[in-house]
Image (tube, rainbow, N blue to C red; front, top):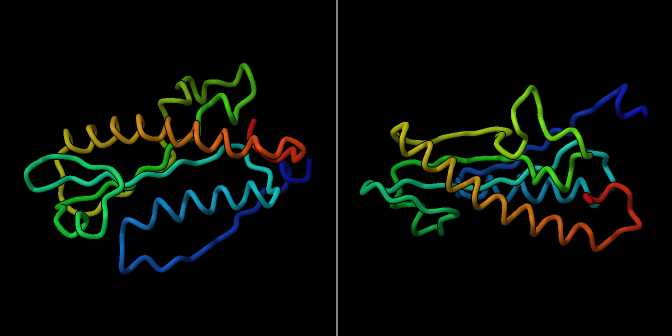
Length: 149
């Protein structure tokens, strides 16, 4: 009850100057660490990096070598699958289905609107697989009520 009345924020600074692709890994790790520590959360987050090459092809979670050849990046954070974090009946937020939502998006470099939306589609598809992975692994500890169901 106190968490609802008095929400709090944990501010973590992570220097990401060497590899921009580390941001999604840091977000995923921080989210899982908060759940593992028993911090109550309304939603889990699944982050992914989507890169656009000069020739127009798109890749997800590039390596360091691939990162250097890309013209633009999109860092996308989606809510975890609604079946693992939301109770029955609350599958919509402000009328929008939660599985179609995005928590945040950050871009670096130049990309067309079409490339951005293609990254969103690819990222959403990949985040569904990451959500399933998180759900399976967080369910390994059923005695802890803070774990996602």
